[in-house]
Structures are given as structure tokens and as C-alpha cells.
Image (cartoon, rainbow, N blue to C red; front, top):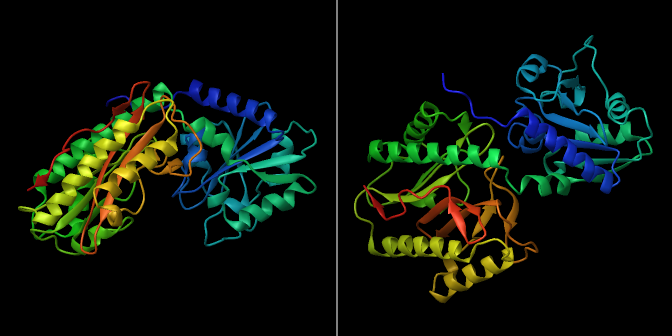
Length: 388
């Protein structure tokens, strides 16, 4: 069996140590990184653990080893997967059905805070992942904190995650390779008369057969009117000739996401559709021309929007043109006209060119690593008008 690509234990240790230095600077005695099945990024970044049914967290003090926090049922699973050796079971990480587990001995936030703080006084507790943390879990942390102040600390992890290491880039390149293989497989097998969901099945089979551990995001096969959906789910709708098919396929490899988006049509595209698809591809390339290390993120967006509006397609624009990708297919930072950061080498973005009309929409999407002179495209196949 081929050796599994994964982040090394030494890189996890480096992440813990670097984060502890950031905690010192932010005057945090304890950091709780939260994640769940849908958004496991912070927890997986620090432990390689991906919760399901239950939620999960990692507790870290200014020194010493981290502790993985899990629900009552996940201990054997967590011990097989986690790079964090110390594991504690806490009731509030239970699944949403809220079983009570009578008679089961569990740990508490109070004991965890004292453990990671080495028995010292805990004055400030930071939470990373607050936007996806259930209020029941937040209230339990607040109650256990007592007089300690609980503050939002997402930026500590965002700063670390936005610049990809060589190991992370290796995993992302593999994820995009699998996505391109799956895209080729789907383009060769999809036929008119299939449902959107049948075509999703083709994509899933190809991804798993070629080494993906999961989908990086729900696979998009959105046809006809549904192709106008910026966010959508495939349905039992039958795919027909002459209509737009928004195809987005993304494989997950050791936690790292990818996505390859292509507009596809069975047969010749109608004239207006083909014109917009071609313009979308032109805009897609134009965005990448603006991107390189040292460029303000807002400048890329402003130039992109000016290009789209100058050509008369401003009404077709919903957002654009990039968002970061890594442990989530969409993660911070977004690239927007209000962005106040510079692009840095080894940031990785999805160049996501989505345009839509009242009757159809299209998406060109590819991964791009920021370099000193421009970008390294992580996916570059099928960048052409696709008429099957």
C-alpha cells in the first residue's frame, strides 16, 4: 500500500510552540481552538483529529503539551488519529442529541484550564473558532472561567494558517491532482439523461479511487437554472443538452482541500452563453495577472471589478475574485475591496470567477499559490470552452 501523505509530528510540534509564543504576546493563559465535523480546520491544524457527530477542541497553555478535548464517545477514534497525546472527554462536546451519559466519569473545563496552565492563575482565555462554536459550549467555558476574561482569539490561528508550509503545499498539490483526474473521468463518462446526483457519484468514485480521503466540499453539479446558484446542492434533476452545467470537483488529502471548477455544456453552447463563458475565462486569467507577493489584496479586487464592469458584465458579478483555501475549501482571508493585507509568498487562494444571469451561471475555479513573481497554478487543465 502506498505511504499516506500526512503532516509530520515535528510540524505539529512546531505549530504548538509557535502558537504558544503568540499566546504570550497576546497575554493569553489558555487557548481553546474549536472545530466540528463541517469546519474542523482549527482542531485538525493542531491535532490532525477530525470530529464527527460530536465536536472537538484543543486546549493549549503558554508552555507544555496541548490537550485534545472530545465528547464522551470518541476516545478510541481520537487515540487512533490524534497527534496530541493527552485527551480529555468533556460533556459539552457531545453530539447534538444531548445524551446525558449517567454514570460516565468525564473531565471538566475547570480541570483542563488548571492542567494546561500548570496550576497557575488563569486570567485570560482565548477562543479560536468562535463563529462555529455552539452557545452551550461557550456558556460552559464562560462558567468554568469564573473571573477569568474570555476573549476571541481567531487571529492567532489565521496568521499561522494563511502561509502554507512545504508539507502543506505537497498535500494541496496532491489534492488538486486528484481533482483534475476526477474531473477528466467525469467529463469522459457524464451523459445527457443522467441526473445531477448520478454525476456527483461519478466524481466521488473517481476521487476515492485515486487517493482522496473525502470531498473537499460538496461536489457541485448544478445545471440549467440551478447553475445560477453561487452556493447549491445537486438534485435529481436530469441534465439536458444545451444548458449550462456548473461542475466543481474538490478532493481532500490529509485534511487539505482543493477545488476545480469548470462550466460545461452538452452540445454547442448558445451564443450568449458561450460569450459569457469566454469572458469568465478571460477574467479568470486577468485576476491571476494581478496577483503576486507584495501586492495589496484590495488592489487585485478593485482591478478585477473594474475589468468586469468596463466590459459591460458588471451586473453578472456577485462577488470576487478570490478566497483562501487550505484546511477548508473556503477559509480566511477573503480577497475583497475592503481587505487591508498584502499578498505573501506561499499564501494559497482559490481564483473563483463566478458570473451569473437570470437563466444560467458559470464558475471557473482554480488553486493558485502566491510567488514573488506571480502565481503557481495548482490546477490548470481544461481551461477552455468545454462542449461535450
